[in-house]
Length: 272
Ligand SMILES: C[S@@+](CC[C@H](N)C(=O)[O-])C[C@H]1O[C@@H](n2cnc3c(N)ncnc32)[C@H](O)[C@@H]1O
Image (cartoon, protein in one colour):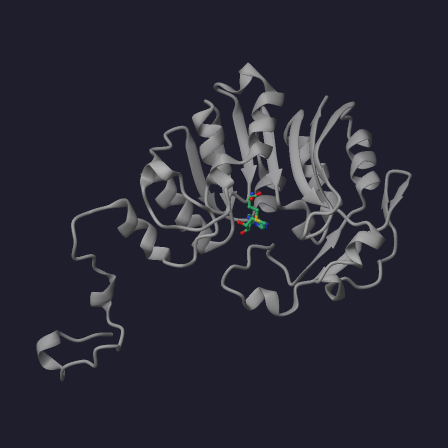
């Protein structure tokens, strides 16, 4: 605990104190953003006039495609978003008229979302902190649409997540990396992938899951993976097969990027 300043010897210039938590200039968006100075992944909208990150997640063509695919019903639609990170996709959905519940487990990411919510005045969105898998297991109502972007490939049990998603909505938008041997083996991160585990039995199908260890990446400040030290990647045909078995008859594919620098990736928009 710090004592009253007058009772202490003068502090060294660089020694951090609770005084550092105070802003001493007039309120501004930048002051709020700078709570996470240097830690933003996303480029926050230009209209805010702030210095932030570089990823264009607030003007993401994948989410524009999801909004188009869902159609005019997006106005007033109840959307569940998994892992909003910094709220870029949430903002796009909110601005399109959706009412979003976004669940984020990472404390820093959750607080950044709250900063964004305030700066962009996102009135239709709610951010909550917690594990979306646990939420999905215990939820008592369904959603018009579930957005699961950048999360399936961070799951230890991705098939279980697909089942939970299917129980939560008749409309799913899933952007994910998937496993294809020759493409993943050519990645700089290929050493993180170990031998495939025993086939996962789902219904009368067998899915091969591919473990990926995060290793030291979990210590990096920008780590935005899942809650465990490893994940298992699915193969593309298996994701498709699983969604079909879960009753999704109409599955659209967009942003098919086998050569994505972080591994082959795809946007699936599925309805039943
Ligand atoms: C790779 S980022 C994807 C961010 C964003 N949805 C996108 O597509 O750009 C994964 C996000 O999901 C969050 N996350 C991962 N596992 C989670 C879980 N089980 N419950 C809640 N959030 C989770 C991470 O903290 C991170 O913000």
